[in-house]
Image (cartoon, rainbow, N blue to C red; front, top):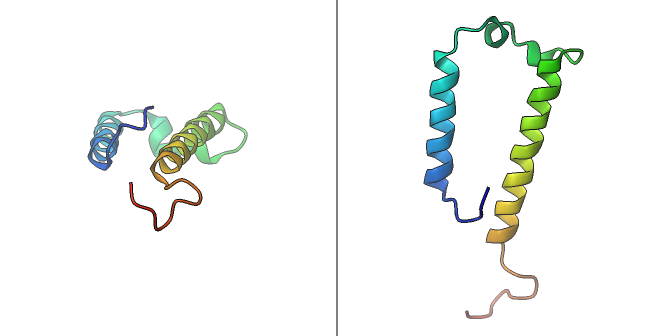
Length: 74
């Protein structure tokens, strides 16, 4: 994931994933097996969530002003 993504890019990606998930007719989605800590689905869900957090942190870090730069012009 690059820091060049915009809010609209992320929103569009989320919408695409939501549409894909809605179209899936698998029992795993309705059973919510990712909530059961003893399943592979849970580990896989947490892997995806951890990567999303890592990506979000990188984006926020990139967007944050440099330390000590408050009040300074560019």
